[in-house]
Length: 404
Image (cartoon, one colour):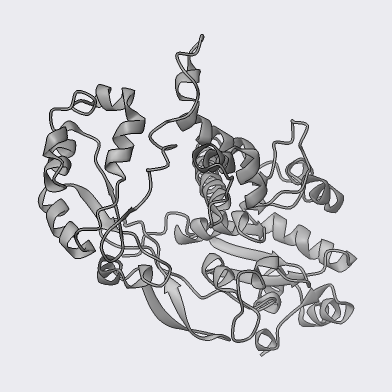
């Protein structure tokens, strides 16, 4: 039985690139109907991150926009503004990640919409909170990584600031926004009232960094400098073997003793610097140098056998080439193949969350720009002649396939 707690909830998706599509993709996984409004220029993500057979779907766009009905509108046209008002009226939830000033100009900000429709749940995902001095400034994931100190962590550790080579801030903020929307939907079912939600990426990710790394500076007065020295150790990284790299962690005293025995460091078993959690916290620099030393005298497979026999958490250090072929991921069917309506055979990544032993439906593949323009307009009450007029004026655009 399919798990669709949001079935019957309509989400108007005014988002693009990554952070907003992550949010609405997650809501779609829970059964919500997602109507994605795209401009004639198209979502920037269609062209970022590599090509595709038709040039319409990058891999990231393909995966983040599953299960969404696509309507293409030119909001500079009066006719499109009227369409948008009908779409707003028919939606339960509106999600936007445009700059606040642009939304206000279009009358699509939370205050404008909820003045007309106080029962709506409106979520703005923005770069910076609208009550601070950075409000309205443009931003992207890498800028947030720098501003929140994430890149500065590798500056402290390695002497050079670096970005995490994935859009981690977008993904985290998008998932948090989806959770906030779910909470607002629950509250609306209780009291019938809508809600205006704001999820700022900067503050959200700064809080994540500080929850871990404010550390000893959390106290007044501080009991030490900020920063979790375990995570900031230059030895806190995958360890080299004779033929590759492995990732492992040992935290408890039994794990540490087992690790030292397996790796032949019997001389350190009674070393007062390493024989307790408290001691290793005091001598964290020295301990991580031991823990992170190369293990090049055995192969990866040999270390897996030894470390797993000692009940130590260890896994391969995958690359982008090897990860899709991990035997666990293959066994659980994380990635499958499907026929996309325009791109041919493509990879499809399922939800990772199970409900009563079942995974939510992957839902339909991502759509070309304007794929369902005409069907959404019909559902909004437009007659065939009115739809034709909107298309002729350029207020609405449709792909050739959607007109069939």
